[in-house]
Image (cartoon, rainbow over all chains, first blue to last red; front, side, top):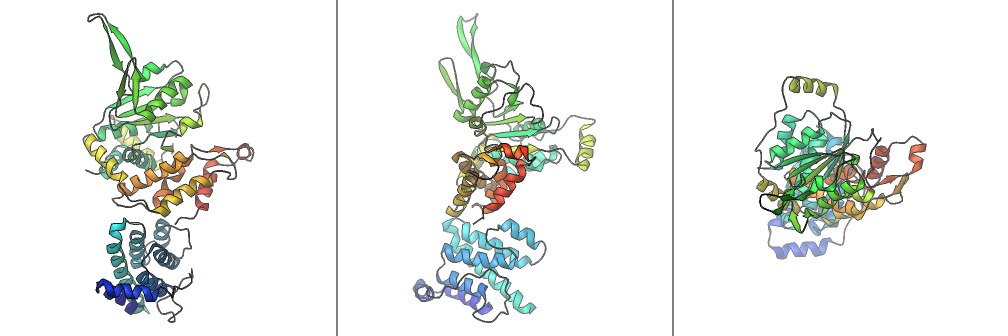
Length: 138
Length: 304
């Protein structure tokens, strides 16, 4: 997972032509939404967070961001229809990295259109930190 | 200068009442009016005075009574014998913060004059029309438990209030602080925290806060959920959806964000909806609680 997120960050730094090619090839593989708690050590192909990140990388649209948010909310123990406030309340002092990632995902999804590319880059960076933290913990 | 500083200043004067303080500052930023419901002596008037003092605005208080006339609020023309001509005397509505105390104690004609001014933000006295100073906010109070000799506000008039706040009794600890703080001296109001020009700027900047389509849809869905909902005889008007959107932006601005979140809409929903819906007779017969009905209704609409 860490490698995937790092890859996403690398690809964003490449020229836009490469990014377009990635977008067109990756849209064919959106994974069905799975609202369940998963861990970074889950088997490849059965990791909703990895799939959601790949979807954001590939499409970067509102729908893919919503998918990622649902997975992150699930990690906070909440289903669809919950808000950031619910998630932060649910987490309390636990998992500060997840809390920061959730906040960044709200900015990337609901922020002004002009600010979203930068917000998405920040989100991917936090996801990298989050995933790194999980992997090192396991 | 930020609206958060005004909120802090109000908290230095008002003990507790976080929801009231938050609502007053939000209404100021959203350029709206507030209806405060609560028992006497729970700092409703003090909060309004503190708000006006903090932004350096003109404050006027009108005690609504059954014999009040529209001209007592709006103003009138009187004959000046020295100059031999009529002169206009503007009423207390020409202020930045107008406290309409016990608004339901005046008859419909007076309520109507106030509420028309709230909507139009101007008043006509004789042949002349005068704009109200900006910012302009009416903060009205009502005592929900003392209905004798009152004139209930029609739903169409209640709709003009952006927010309706229930002012609760303070906690025991807060009440002890109140006695210590105000027992020996008058409340000290923080002045000059911001200027009227600052308020105008906040209002302009808050209107520019980004509201995503899905958050707009969430506000609309919340309002639509009130129509035909259990225990509700009538739901909220489209003005409620507008209020949710305006207040979501204001709340985001107060939180120093350039975009609104679903939390912003949900946080203000009860205060936006509670005076805009009518509960049906079953709720009273079953001894139910309107607040609980609203809370359940808001929770039933999934946030984006």
